Length: 244
Image 1 (cartoon, rainbow, N blue to C red):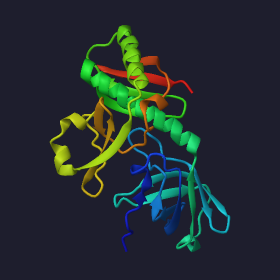
Image 2 (tube, rainbow, N blue to C red):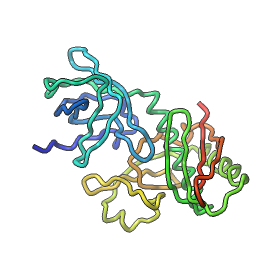
Image 3 (tube, one colour):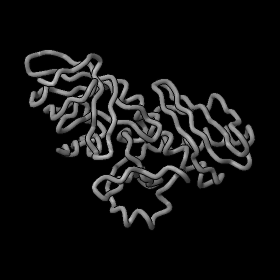
């Protein structure tokens, strides 16, 4: 029997940090629930961590999550769950501080990748987001130390303009004709129920994305490029950090 797809609450509300949920399946170290606030990973952003608190008060640590091909989100438990959890309800709570940090980095990378593509022709070739820093790779034919300084200034100018963010959906068919929503050449955004999620920074940019973000650019903090590396011909890696 195929499980029903998990309702992913974070796709409607980036600031959904907890929710009631019911266990619908157990598989090895994983539990599936009818709905979740846990980001399941992707786009360089790691999955959320947190706890599932059963109605009786028992806490189950959740160390990771992923979505399978049927859009069921499986939550990895810190200890082996038992089959008798199926049908039981409780409260899911993510690590809020960690989520907010990852969301700040994910949002600033939207600003950086937009400026890099528009002004320097750089397409993303890789991303990795952590709580204390992030790295992003671009295909760039020309690079100089001056570019890093310019990027810092331009990104911080957008941050300080305090632009609001919003998300909405378009059909996959519409998305196919919107190359302006792409920032990578090889990796395509997730298509869920025939729709693609678009995240817009008001008056600045819109791009396809399934990750989590802050509500406005002023929530990001000051941006710094603290290191660059060459990662092959015409491929440049930027390491970035945000003020706490």
